Image 1 (spheres, one colour):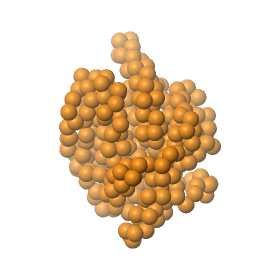
Image 2 (tube, rainbow, N blue to C red):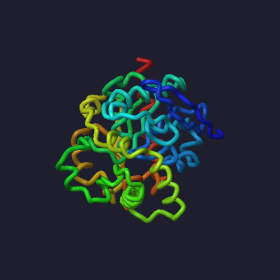
Image 3 (tube, rainbow, N blue to C red):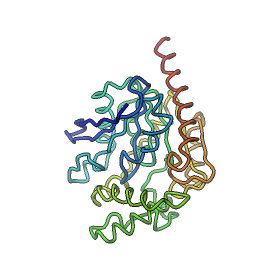
Image 4 (cartoon, rainbow, N blue to C red):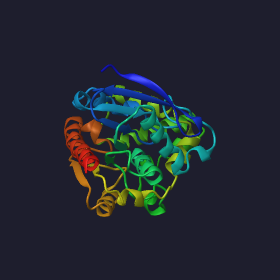
Length: 285
């Protein structure tokens, strides 16, 4: 399927830019990018093995990419706008029990969705480099390097923003990015206004309990060379989700779907098969 784009009205009428690719008749995977990122974060999935079997839906989150960017922290600092945006995508594209696949902050968006809308309309949740710890937790933030804290990305000075963004991106990957990849990623990071970055990253919506209470399948994906979601954060997440399937990737950093795309796609496909089969069994019962 040639990629197509949709414009969907989300919470408060915010226009969401959504990219669709893959097998139009396949089970739907709703790919939710991370903080200050873009639907192009999933480029390797659009062109990889997942696209042969699954319908891939990748929105630009509110405030990101080509989606609407309303001013005011209240558009970003609570669960409802993000959760309602995901529900709007599900409804507008008639997605039948999609699997939510959330990277980093995108994993928190998936949690927020479950906390607001429940799990009835989804097959399950897969989180990548996401912790159940609140992103604004002072102890967690204190342990992070300046590159990962990326406080310069909140600055109104574009030079400071650029320097901090490049340092943050380099910290997200275990191996150096190519010059072209770093340039493209820096470009789409700079599409997010600094005030939106701050409001969205530091929100604490208290959504962890909803994920822990899920009866549908949950999976945790984590790169063993991860710096953003540190080992203690990963261990805490696994301990909080004892029934979750767990997949780890030696030598990969914060984005194993980019650094180990073949292994990641294979693992996600296997988990998705389990989740969709479970949903079908539940519907037949």
